[in-house]
Length: 412
Image 1 (cartoon, rainbow, N blue to C red):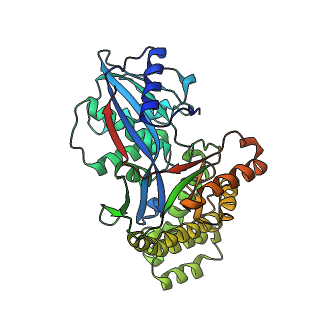
Image 2: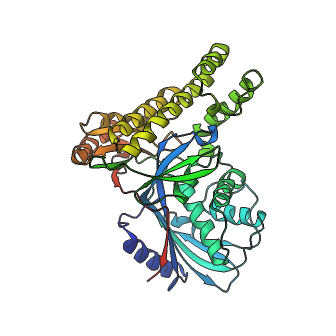
Image 3: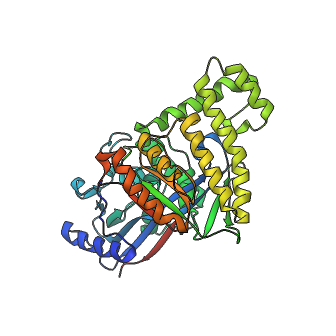
């Protein structure tokens, strides 16, 4: 994937989109732009498919989509990040699910497939050009793209008042049913519901979303993306798929004796102990996955209370402990991600660090006092290329702002 270096904001992105549209023969002049964010999960990473509460924020690494209706009856898309794919034309005839594997076009096809399956009209032609600067793993690039395409098509067909959680479910279905990626709903929820300056708390038992302000006592701090320069090819090709299958298998094994429906049901210490006694010898790896989820849920409550108080030091400490659990118990991290975490951990003023997202590759994240930002950047720029010289010209350190997940505006 190519990420244009000049993407510093909406103005740069729209200028680039207009220039590219002219080059490839698409007409977006006077159209609309939809910008969808990345996400930074504070807890519980990998908790969505295990049934835990979720908490995160929208962050300002984006996907921009500029579009305008046409009279062709075809949706014509071009991605500036994947120029070799050319203009993708989508008509009434869609490739079968899971048949397109090596092109970003699988998302454009998948969104139409799910919308049609759900009974929404998809006939209006349009031209659309896309560009993004979200790292290739860890900050939910695929969910951001899927939501952007879906919301754009619904707008183009004047479909209004679709319940947000239906949007979430359909966006998940694009990845699950069409692409074959076994993702949960964390990424879609954290982007679609994201609000500037607020954390998003999702309760899976009620389906309710709450926006939680950061307490006034917080010190001056920033969230940071530590992009390793690596790109994960997709959850369907990563250890994410293995971990999810292990968790689901463990629930099937434990359910008859212990009555659980998901790993998040194991909150009582005595129940946790009895399950480990029963399966520790026969299924040690499965028990390790449970260990992460059990402790992460207990830490989650502490973290959420600290966020409301503005106690960012505790939020950072929990973030760090979660990272150690993801590395040692859930075993979903990767060497480049852990190098970034090891470097960040040496810098005074870094309150917490861990891998982000599906695992293996992509970006790590850090919670950093503002006064320590320069030292963190210098430490990464000095040490990371020595450990991973193959990525010496690809890694990056990005300071992040907390933003709305979805923004639309006219293309000037």
